[in-house]
Image 1 (cartoon, rainbow, N blue to C red):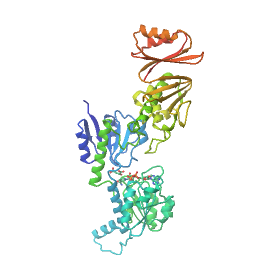
Image 2 (cartoon, rainbow, N blue to C red):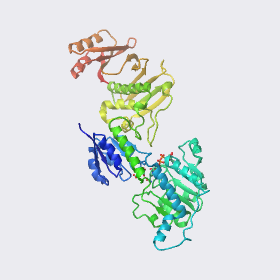
Image 3 (cartoon, rainbow, N blue to C red):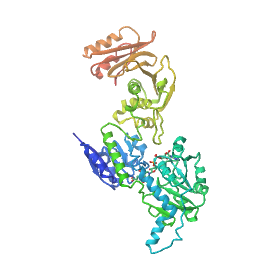
Image 4 (cartoon, protein in one colour):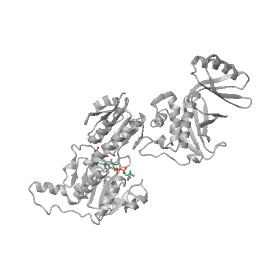
Length: 540
Ligand SMILES: NC(=O)c1ccc[n+]([C@@H]2O[C@H](COP(=O)([O-])OP(=O)(O)OC[C@H]3O[C@@H](n4cnc5c(N)ncnc54)[C@H](O)[C@@H]3O)[C@@H](O)[C@H]2O)c1
Ligand SMILES: O=C(O)CC[C@@H](O)C(=O)O
């Protein structure tokens, strides 16, 4: 049996490597410090790569992804991975968000104390032969107000520790509930500005996003108290480095402690010349425990994902099919199959796909977003798009990249919800409009837990969309069906089921389920039957 191949592009703790090797069917290669160009050449040979902040996974690296299925980040921050580019290629991106929380929290506390008491400068001074106690006058933490920007895992743990120092803690985080802040004894502020104005020390614990990049510039620094202390152990770029330089130089900012930089390593960075700036080389996660934590977590996740068991902490899978309630899983498969059926029966280039979720079952959204994405579709819509596109794109389309492919093809995707449709309380309706025609197919699930198609354009029918079918549309006149049966019989094709629907005096459609493969020749014979409008083979 061919083994899975995993490439580790940065140093990770050996406990993680051991987990990969112990799985028995994974080969591991470690190439810490591999260059971008070298990685680009070989990335497609691996089923998964494991990175830390030392590797930047850009879109160009993923141009020819070969068999790459997973990018695993041994840590939290994913700003070094182009998640959208990975999603477009159907590659799963996962991180290990909890492994280094305490390591980063404790560094933050250390940096805060170092900045308040100028400990690194005092250390250097004494080691340089000075004994200057007056020069190192610090600021007490007790009774001071700490402003935490980003009250997630690390922000919360910093809050707990800061309170034990007797600090008043306020926070700004527009994405958390007030009850979370309340439970930590933290005052949640509505606006960043409110925090900037009242805090003696400000510490940042957000990811680097479009919103947080340059969140702190000259303008925000001017709002702060004089002699404020700033701590950033989150991501370089949250505080604008030029503006921080000016504020430290002028004394507006008393001291700052920084673990992360806009460009790492921070070559020729004038900030490093300042005596009131204390720095560490992005070591927030560097404790033995933290490194073991992230390595073990990411290795276990990769083993499980490669074996298709689970996809923990995958940030670009909008949902897990297996985590949907069982009854919704049946609808999920049904709408994917409806998408496949639509693609095999419609003519022309698709302009629009519309999915209508009908009934109470679909009232609540079940999709949670964990990263910036241009789409907010529910799983059923994604499954419908995937099913539709799969007919032309085969296995290159996945639940991850289906919405991107639709967008690339200028297919307008619309999702809507309704309480009732026709006589149905629970129904999924798939509509596709092409440059030639429109198709509406709807399905529901009855008590036997089988997904059924109950509407096909204006026709009412009842088919279970699984297997091989001949679909045909004909003028509703005697003899057509008999001729189809004769052609199939004379070609030794066994009919397993026959579902017919017709409109008064107009057209009729049929789905003939068959046990054998239908060749082009057989289909051509059927198409030539007098009264036949169209005929297709449908495989689901
Ligand atoms: N220095 C290091 O080595 C090191 C180690 C670990 C983590 N980190 C970084 O620390 C940061 C926090 O990590 P975490 O594990 O606590 O993440 P987290 O996801 O648990 O918390 C981030 C918080 O930021 C909030 N947030 C997002 N956008 C915001 C905005 N515009 N304004 C205010 N709040 C906003 C989120 O709501 C969330 O609560 C990340 O950037 C991570 O990469 C750095
Ligand atoms: O050690 C690293 O890779 C940095 C870790 C840290 O920045 C993170 O986001 O988890």
